[in-house]
Length: 206
Image 1: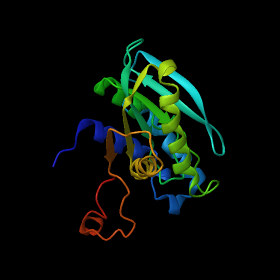
Image 2 (image 1 turned 60 degrees about the vertical axis):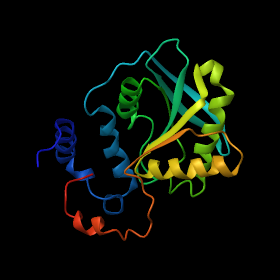
Image 3 (image 1 turned 180 degrees about the vertical axis):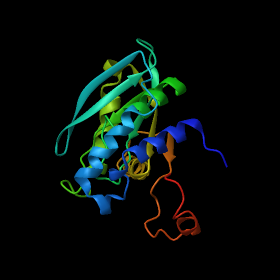
């Protein structure tokens, strides 16, 4: 079965940087962190009208966030994006390309969260940072030019897990309201017992 051209570019890039392509357990956190930086540049840079860096007061200090908007001045619904990386690698830069494309193609404003990573910062640091960012967005809606009454959460892999966890925190702690969750290949089964884990164990990288 042929692969999508963008996926071919991704796999080719991983092959060219093969030393970092093993599992985090195999190569170590520091090497894996260096490798994932290439993700932010794969496929080129999609231009959006507005890119802004902000900081969110968090339980462990300031949390960097980056806003991407397809409009310079329109008030748009907002997606809070939580990056993947096994809870221990990845950052705003590694997922810059993904967030740009999401903003451009959805017509929504995206706020990417640089939550604290393990092993330096153990659970529940990551979900608490994500929840702090979700609380911050409505408080700053005017400055950010977003409609916080239409706020979604999105994330890939470990970020998909954090999307679900953060939505549950918002539910249990009285808000803010989450309108939608976009979980891309989320980590939501710690047992790893589904047949696909074995069937696709030797397949191409997801």
